[in-house]
Image 1 (tube, protein in one colour):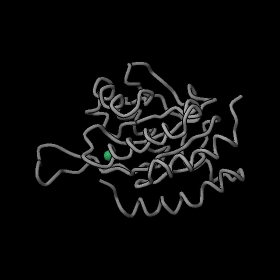
Image 2 (cartoon, rainbow, N blue to C red; image 1 turned 135 degrees about the vertical axis):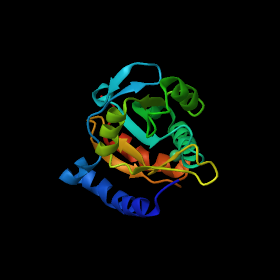
Image 3 (spheres, rainbow, N blue to C red; image 1 turned 120 degrees about the horizontal axis):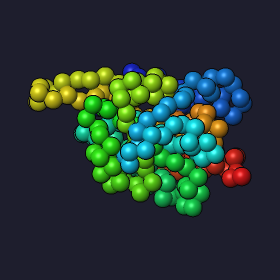
Length: 194
Ligand code: NI
């Protein structure tokens, strides 16, 4: 589930920030920042571990009924469409539900989408830091049909971060895999592998 207003605001942002990123505008620093989290294989990893690679970052949770599986499928398909150059991109799935998303649960989940997709969880404080850095909308809700459990309303954007760890662009929910690949390709071409 997504909050329409938040998404509309960020769709607008998506139209603006790619330009900002290209021109060195300080607005490019609006999304992203340091994080240290626990990967689905139990390792502690930080954003700085991925310097030199692009990061494709998505926030969601394994119990998400609809939005996350669709977006992760799109991400996986887009990486396939990019071919070998996709090896320069580290796809990351950061949970917005650290209370339930254990490394083990994340491991099973991410591997069903893409062999290199890295699931990240951590303490509530760890996750709160990442959520804040990426300006992610995250609100718990009680489903009407199952009041004993909870869901997490969350924004559904995919962030491309550059080899310097800084924000490059956003890909909104409902983007096709072909379109996502087309969005990513120029960023890879502009910053060739060293
Ligand atoms: Ni979701």
